[in-house]
Length: 302
Image 1 (cartoon, rainbow, N blue to C red):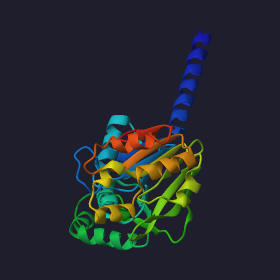
Image 2 (image 1 turned 90 degrees about the vertical axis):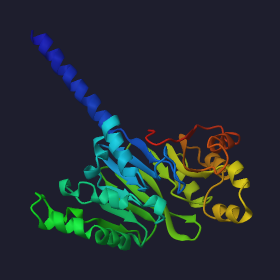
Image 3 (image 1 turned 180 degrees about the horizontal axis):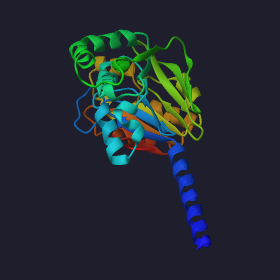
């Protein structure tokens, strides 16, 4: 009997260790792979890195909150329940990367235990102030009426505008580093390097071919990078070709980046393909790069 109890206790302890290891293992969840072009299957750009139960979310395109809820319900990722998301990092202030920022801040805020911390370019505070103005009636009713609210200040966002490239967050063994990328006329724009105890993840944001990104992404376990199908791009009028090439990365350029950085997996997101099949973004890269390439869909996990 004592032996059986000892075995059961040992199995329970082993199970706990396995569960703890699974909790600590870093997960990369793609919450949105779309572009400004409406697509029923692709939410606006967003990615989450989950480590030790904590979610670090990068960009908040339209539909990101719904995808986070789906990941919570369907994948059991507790950290992606909206009120538990504490860290948001915005690459730049284009609408397709920020439309769900106010949605994330507003969703069930009266059940938050900690304020949302939002990191991003100068201008993020003004955008946040606009959210307060947009929701002024709702905020007033919830904080001044008879609704039970634990902490009336939780609707507020703790905004951290990035002043310079470098490490902007260190938390529980996770480091987030911002670095400047070139996204055409909008400045500044940032990519992010996320280092956890077991993974290095690089998120390009929107960018042209970037030497800085190449430096940061060398040997990364996961490189999540925007992309343009060259076949689709070549069919555009010259003025649109010039615009997109000044702000985004062609497949031939991304193949070059991948050859120089050799990531564990290259994940394609923010997939601009115009009139060409979306798969061309992947096949064009694979013609010049023999590493692992994934054409991401919303809720893919790495």
